[in-house]
Length: 372
Image (cartoon, rainbow, N blue to C red; front, side, top):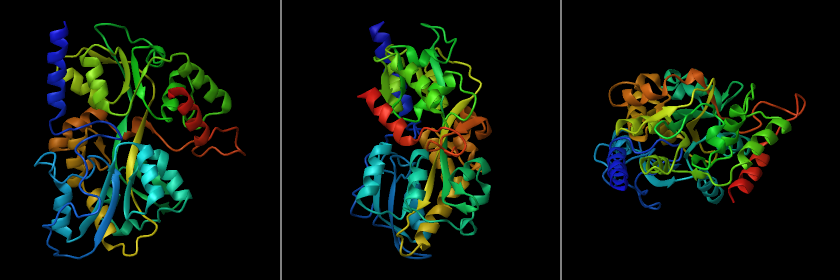
């Protein structure tokens, strides 16, 4: 049995090393290039000049160092003449927040828990969609997540969704709460996971707009189990199931697809609703010359770029036209974004005058207490 587990793990890891490198909003491909020098010194300006300072998750901007087939950022430099002078890549949302506190960037790929604070803190500026050729092709539901009224602040890039999975050879997956009460389960290390717990507990409204009573009920369910695994890298899920250490997990469709491909008997617990997230590119507030920044946003919105990124990351593209060729399999795993309740920074649209709401500070505090 031990030899079989090791062989299975190696097979899974080998498959995971193929074009799709991860399935999380905070993935882990190769280390970033030097933060002070241009990752590419061969770009020849043709259509413009200027430089960019970029902050993003690892794997979202590839130069070919991990795989010769993943070099879309180098192609951007060659096609536009803009040079990426600084590329800072992070693994976690917390690291991204720290980087933003240290310096400013021209473009940032932000997740749902950061988008709201960047807008409120005036760290990003309003966009002009007319300057972004592919903006109108992006899913309207995803575009609306980074808009405030008629003001647009982000360009949706990649999105993901959660699902609750289990090893059908060892356990039964009858109820969603099993994932949050079993000691042999793994859940994402993020305060936003509380929304998934609230859904498992029967919340009927928006899981990111919880009353104090609903919030306390979700935390009570979470606190009933202290021995679970908290993951920030989806490779930990692959290893956990392949070696028999996990029975349940809060995962993504890509992880489930990957495990099934190598013969793991993984099934999904049926749920009426699911949560998800979208990472969007935003324009820094202090950009002196926005020409190259808009060229980047235009490039990031294109179907070709998003097709490359989706196939590489195991996440769905925000541009439906990207769901062809190498990204078709990934798109098929996630389905349409219409069925997903996408994360927003709590309390979302809930305000005190409407009803009692719990804010993100409360979510973060209780989550840190839980995992510490």
